[in-house]
Length: 381
Image (tube, rainbow, N blue to C red; front, side, top):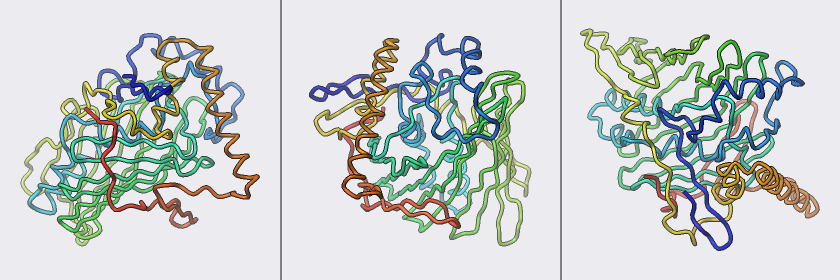
């Protein structure tokens, strides 16, 4: 979807969803890309941090990583957040939060990746009463902050995320550092959780999956979920999720959690053995559509779809020389801005929408400046 904003294009593409995982294009299939992917890493050492690793445009999805984070919150076929809020008991609400957390896990394509966001880049989208705002608050290391509010449901969400990708020889694993908070303010409940790691398997069978442990806890009622995301070495339907929901005060297991995060996830009540479905990926993340621009004049110049608009359009048109020039132009603008700040003695970047701090003990903390996120000129469908 392309909208005109004066002389600037706002380019928005479909989010990752079941059955696609990216912009549908046979040229992006794993077999045709495997050889080229291997050549990218031929001079990279084992264990290397790939944060600063630059991909040529042919290996880019026409969207920023900032947009990918936002899509996992606002691009859904069902209103999972309202379900979290409407639960009558703490356990019912907690189980819905577990399902919502699983819904933020999205399929990713092999061999291509989103752009690394530039410092100060933003992404501002609304879906119904949910308003979502993201900002790239640090470039080195890359740190993204998210703030989302739904005034009608009285829900608030705060994320702070730092991907750390490392080369493992036959794979790349991106650890996603940082904390996610979901606040159900009507109930006085705050839920904290982390993200699984993105695992890119090059050999023996190319593929992309989510792996690792996710812990979810409610600070007020003591309920805890311990989930494990697992992958199959040889591909196939191996996107397993296993775990438990328990009462931390008694360590009693209340539910067993099991299934596949890209299909069905169920829970089993340990008291009576009854099983029920809590998440259906087909209902939530299939056939998702690109957002639309409702008010082009109100789109910020820092919006992802503007910053990368020319590059994204060139990739969609497969104009690779034009794409290379557009990507270089974005990167050069960022370097010029950095040099300009240094000449002015401004060595610390100040985000517009967040207060950011870092400590070895807590890591990165991103606190929103404003209580509510305003309605956005871009609307999720």
